[in-house]
Image (cartoon, rainbow, N blue to C red; front, side, top):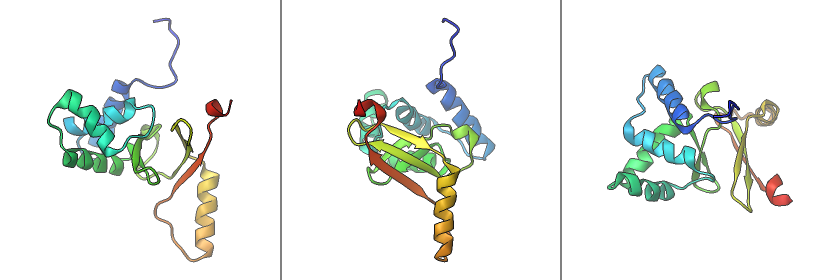
Length: 155
């Protein structure tokens, strides 16, 4: 090691943090749930449940779709992964240790390479909540997905 700090914690460190977070909330990051989270954390782009299943079958053999869907439901409830509605795919929460379950985030999705960048812009969140309130609507959950071209693909 050269002593240079990495910007992203390792997958093992993120799994350990996720397990501690689950325990603190009275839940358990079981081995099947951790296996699904590991696959999502390692992915460079959003994955569908069947993409995850295909990757798990190489290492976990007889993994079934219900196992993956149950794990994804749990991981979403715990705020460890996000479901991208337009894609029907899942991405890891960029820094699940710093915010509560169900935090509001915005996603920038590159239509060229599929990369996803998670934002947590409070001004965007507040603007949407204010607009909804003006119409008498009380927002409980907000997911903003913006598609376009990332900086890397634009060059």
